[in-house]
Image (tube, rainbow, N blue to C red; front, side):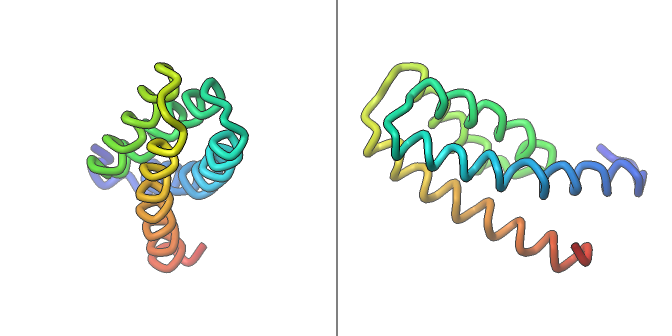
Length: 102
């Protein structure tokens, strides 16, 4: 998608590293507070950022949390999915910081 555009790549990575960990933290707080609406909104916000990096499985997990939030589903199931999402995102954050000296 970037077609070798270094500025675009750096921009996407910067946004990811700045926004996604904060959104992930907010999502965890929302789940702890059993706030379905906030969980829905944050999962919805995380989705395009992981999609830009081609993280298809992570996007699917975020979509599932988003859908469950909208449907006010069982928080414990959402929290289980969140643990998968958190692990995947934290791994990619670590790799990006290492690869791009951030």
